[in-house]
Image (cartoon, rainbow, N blue to C red; front, side, top):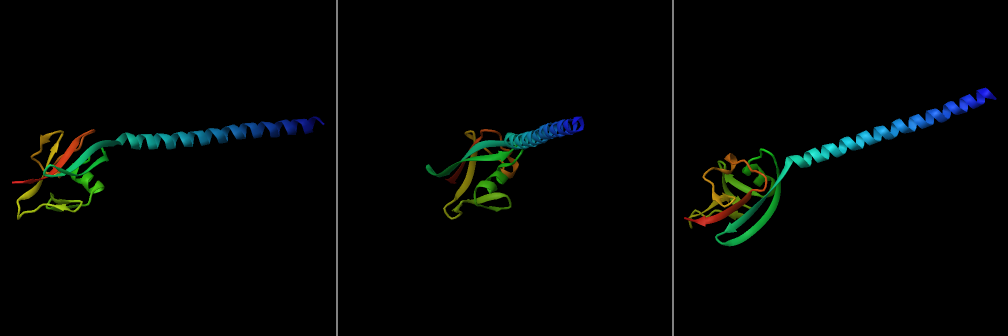
Length: 135
């Protein structure tokens, strides 16, 4: 009878300890997954991009991008663009018009940018405005 009680107590102990270690492993896995998602979200930054044709707004988007990403790559991720050696010629079907001397120019946070989109690194909460402007 004592052996039977010992065996029964041993089995109950194994079940209790086995259940605890299983829950702890699940908890750790879940925690790791949450940290990975949280870490990925931390690397994503937000900015807005507005497209204008003169004073007419064509579109406005809030975009996400990764730290250190340049404007050109962020555009490619969020719009259909065409370029000529890195110079943007069309965004979402809105193309430059050399005959009428209309070209894409852009500002960031209301400041004119005199560099190409590949040379500009986006920063958190930048307000980018691309404008088809006549020269």
